[in-house]
Structure formats: structure tokens, C-alpha cells
Amino acid sequence: VECHNYIRVMVRQSNGRNLICGTHAYSPKCREYVYSDGDRMLQQRRQFDGQGIAPYDPKHNSTAVYIADANEIYTGTVSDFAGNDPLIYRKRLSDDEGLRTQRDDLKVLDCK
Image (cartoon, rainbow, N blue to C red):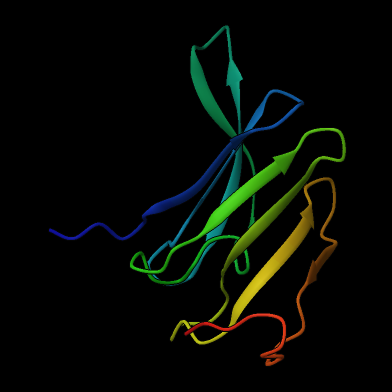
């Protein structure tokens, strides 16, 4: 049996939440969880598109750095199914604002 969701990014945010992003069967997704002391369980707070944060394919590499003061995540991964669009991406976790490197600019990034 093959797994359909490979966790690629996991960070503990400054607000006590946990951000977990995975491949989600070639459709990257991120979820924020908060730990409930009373229930001793993780409760999902929200889910959002993980494109640019986690790769589509579990064979593709990714890296992430969380900046607590700004509540931002910086990632390096690929943003397409084939793995031909490498990027560096910044996302504010408080809203849907994101910024990525320019697509198809080989002077910035080279996937080979």
C-alpha cells in the first residue's frame, strides 16, 4: 500500500499552532493545527493550497524556514507536477499573500 500524503513541511508557529504541509496525492495541501490541552488532541483550524510550499511529488525535495516575528514561511521547492518549475516562495500565514521568484528566469534558479 502506497501512502498518498507525504509530509514535506512541518513548523511550530509562534501562536502555538502547527503548520503541516504535504503532497496530498499530487495536490499539495497545508493545514494548521492547534493542540487542545483539555482534549489532549490536535484540532484542525484551517486548510489551504500548499502549492509553492510542498512539492507535488514526494520524490522532489523541499526546504522551509519559518520566521516567527513576521509569521511567514519561506520555501524552496518546485511548483509543478513535472518538477520543472523551481521556486523560492514567501507566504504570510496570517493571510493569503504570497510572493515567488519569477517563473522561467534561468538567471535566478536552474532546476538542473
